[in-house]
Structures are given as C-alpha cells and as structure tokens.
Image 1 (spheres, rainbow, N blue to C red):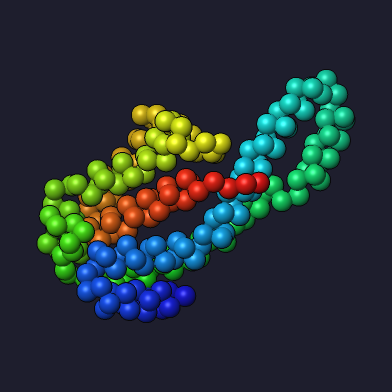
Image 2 (cartoon, helix red, strand yellow; image 1 turned 90 degrees about the vertical axis):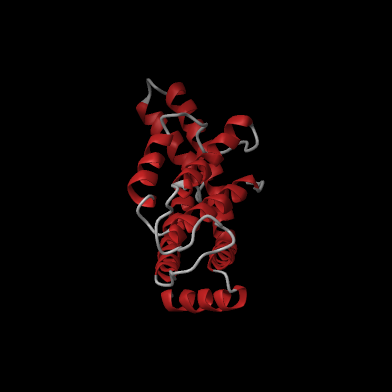
Length: 203
C-alpha cells in the first residue's frame, strides 16, 4: 500500500511541480477515499453518545436492583447492535493512514513551496517556528468551533487551556525539529478533519 501511495504522490508532484501543493492534494485525495468510513464512524459515535446517556438513566433508575439493571442493559445493547462499530472503523483506518504517512515521509525533497513562502527548504525545520504555532491552532480548531456552537451534537470536548498542553508539547518536541513538509502535512490533515466535523450526519 505504501508503494501505491508513493506512486500517487509522485504523480501529483510531477503534475503540480510544487511540493507543498502536492502534499495538500495528496492528503485531500486520501481523506476523500476515507470519507465513507469517517461518516460511518461519526454515526456510530453519535449512537454511542446517546447510548451512554441512556445507560446513565438506567443506572440511576435501577441503582437498588442490580439484576433488573443488568437485564435492561442487555436489552439496550440488543436494540443498538452497531453502537461499538465506530472504534472498529477507527482501527481499520490505521493501516491506511500509516501507509500514507510512510509514503509521504519517503518523498520529502529539498525544495521550497509557494504554500510556505518563508521556507526555502521543506526538508529542514521551520526557522521561524511558525509551523508549530499553526499546528497548535489547527489542532485546537474543532474544540473552538464546538465552543462557539459551529459544531453541534459532537463528541469533541469544548475548548480549554489545559487541553492545549499535549498539543503544545508535541509541537515543541517534534515539529520544531521535524522537516517543514511534515508539519504542513499534519496541519492539512487537521484542517480536513475539522471540515469533516462540520458535515452534518444523521443517525
């Protein structure tokens, strides 16, 4: 699969003649291919969220009757047989995403891009540390949109300063020393994932 992705990336690069644009097009194409799985995952997560609320109601209602609680819980799961499929779909995508990442990493070249005009060499870290900052913003974007109400009925938590700490650590420890091309890939992936969150999905 990595070889297929590498060939696809090379075709895109030869067509665009710009490595930054090739990263964006490549990432979009793979994300589009995964979109049906992502939609099914979102539906399953919404069902799981609703199921969790119903479970809490049952626990409160039958807190003094463990046998009845177990019976109602079994019935609840029978009525929602596909509630746990979201996690399975997430793991199913992992080999594809890993192959995509390897294909991308194996094709980093020493060249600039019009996408990041302040960088002369995409194979080296961003000398101005702008990419790590943009990455932090792109990572926090879904939570910010949930906080302001742009994304509703989502499993994404609302924005808080504490949730930025792991993202900042990743940005400082990894992206400040990684090739700028890698940072661009992560940023584009975050932006596409945010757009996917904006797509309304019915249960």
